[in-house]
Image (tube, rainbow, N blue to C red; front, side, top):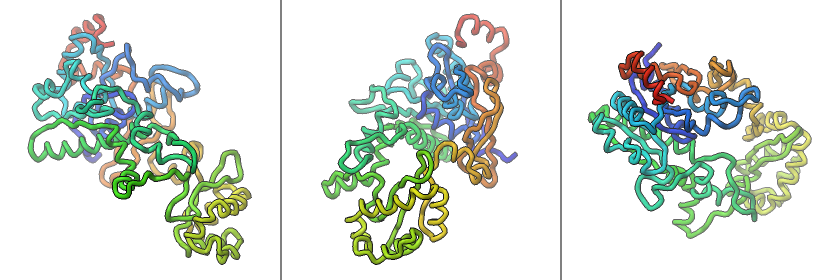
Amino acid sequence: MSRLPLAGIRVADFTWVWAGPFCTLQLAHLGAEVIRIETASRPCITRQILPWPDGKPGINRSGYFNQYNQNKRSLSLNLKTSEALDIAKQLVAKSDIVTENFAGGVMDRMGLGYDVLKQLRPDLIMISLSGYGATGPERKHISYGPAQVPMSGLSSLTGYKDWPPMHVGISYGDPNGGLHGAFAVLCALMYRARTGKGQYIDLSQWETSTALVAEGLLDYSMNGTQPARDGNHDLYMAPHGVFPSVGQDRWLSLAVRNDEEWQRFCAVLGRPELAADARFVTLTARKQNEDALEAIITEWTQTRTPEEAAAQLQASGIPAATVANAKDLSTDPHLNGRPIFVYNEHPEIGVKQHIGVPWQLSKTPLPVRAAPTLGQDTEYVLRDILGYGETAIASLRERQVLT
């Protein structure tokens, strides 16, 4: 097998919940040895939430945890003990990267702040993916992804005309912050390769989420205008939206980008006379009569499945697609014809479908392992990385250091 992009890079991973683990998932997929530091006395929240395979709960059975912690190892340490903290520092000394996503100042209070850890390894790269960054008046506040959506301004842009702001459906701040964090770490690794120097990365999930609404910020900063909520409508395309189709909660998404496409769209609808209708002949006219336009389209989409309607429109070069649900994605022939889905054996839940690496490298196949059970790799880390003997490991277990 070809050498993996991050082969030989070790990550001491103190992260939990979603943002931090999503960051380290990218590093693990690229071949880094990511070692999650966990404890049974305060297990990661994602080990305790749905979905449970076959409806059976368990600390190692969460589909959520097992999705976002593939290709990682798990070291169980009770960091409330001085011995566990010492072991954590030993691991840091043998690691290239440290990751954490607690509130600002938590790692410092634990004795694991960057100023301490860089003494153990001067070229260490450490990233903190806190909610508000390591500086500023909000730095000590705890943050979770759902709060980042309204705070970033995204909710103010999400919703229907004349409706209040709406949540976007997921906690965007978490995966968005995680991806920004992984990119920052890769940049720091490139810098270290050139200079031999490590560095501290201070990432604010609030700020990375705010970057998602650049158009809204620019509109206000340049024009003093707060963009209005307008559902799935678009300023420069009409029709543009999601329409009900045949089936339970089945929908079709479509967009007509210009007047020439509008002509073809009318032909697909079997309503060629609409192409010359003064209400719809130009983009400006279509925008002014959007409610009437969408009523006509809905009459057509409600007589077809989204798959049928999308196929007809695509055949005429008009962007259209089924609004896919989870079953659609899981069974999609295109996705299943590529290596996006993985089916790895997990010691407690057996083989279940998971999303693997969402990109392909032409010369470097990226293997995927199932997520670890809690503390699964404790003995490996202590014995093979830190040099502890069996007697010493047994003593640590007896004293509840490895819980």
